[in-house]
Image (cartoon, rainbow, N blue to C red; front, side):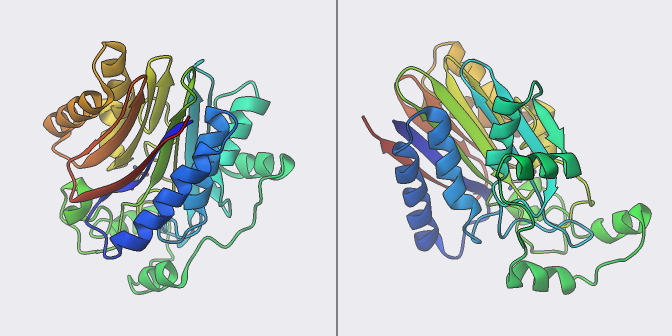
Length: 298
Ligand SMILES: NC(=O)C[C@H](N)C(=O)O
């Protein structure tokens, strides 16, 4: 199994070494998977459980103080599953897999996705807030009002300008650290992305991550997982773009580079993407950092 994982595009992390160790562990765990789908689910599962990353525990807090998780998964037979807006669900990627494998649908949201998770044995009711995310939210003097008050409150807080979105923000809450993985056994591929979204987004906001073609995409040519300013990633369907380059016959590194160049040119925003093709793995980002790990197994 060959596996590439990422730990999100954004500002350069304060603690790159321990983060890299977790990414390496995730890629190694993925490489033990029996299928590419098992590989990406278990690789991302390691990262969802680590509070350093913005997925599962430690995910970004929305304007009402709740962490809601999103994920999407796709295999090279074009089977897709996605789940979003799930409070208390650490392993969003596993719920996306349930949607893909156990339902006739491709996308399930909110309380119904949480119910589906519980029905299929994915743990729910997990406290996804860490002391750090709780304190950071409380320090922002959160509003208790309705959507209009929330919009006023988040106007100066959503989107950390130095991280990725290019906007001015008074907040230094990280928007990065979304996680993703792509794997192949040499014949088929799977791609997955999992996130808590972006800090201080409007309650109920869903970004690119669970949207097929934006946060993730996979065909027989290979797969991609994206990270960064989700609104902008969705505008250009970044993962679909990267896989299109693979389909056109370019290598994975060039496919990643081209997709990020196009993304930057169109949006002026920040993102990263990992790509796995038939021959190689590639990654590109236009933010200050994006950590990856690659295992080239049998
Ligand atoms: N850090 C990220 O990658 C955030 C994610 N793309 C989102 O917008 O939800």
